[in-house]
Image (cartoon, rainbow, N blue to C red; front, top):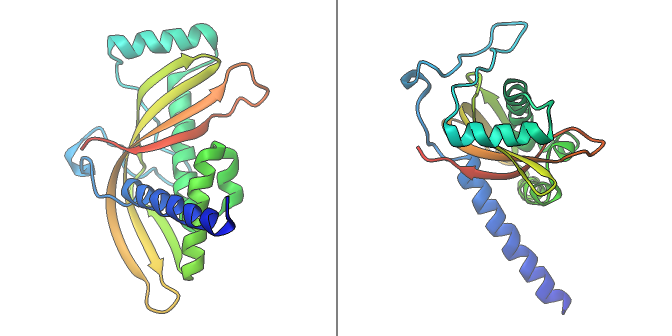
Length: 205
């Protein structure tokens, strides 16, 4: 394949990934924090607000039971707390361009797409910072086993403040609310027990 054609193809793929990433991480969707009394507020100093696990429907409960049969140590509440911490770390890490923080939390495919967005931002000379205005809400939507992998989907609701400083110009601050479904995976029986983010998609409002 000619080098010029490879460059063009890479540029097209990067553009598509950036568009998808913007739609997911930058879209104002989902319920408002004040509209849902169950949405946790900002954690008090010195600790995180606890994650509660609502009653699961029959299908989800059966899927969780199937996962626990393969992985008796799986605990939905503990998993959700870890997923929420990973969510905050990943969102902040993407905004700041911290590749070292992102790499152990993402699958290779997701890392590639996130890195494309970071590289494009660096090429523009922009700097970005993301702050959470409230503790994100995390709801377990799926936990199951597919072949040799444990798969879990979590719906996150978050209220964010995003500060973008262009290479030339003043900082622009935007507050937004997001609703997203993140899919986490890990290989059952692997030496590394950690979950990795395998997919990000917008959630229905």
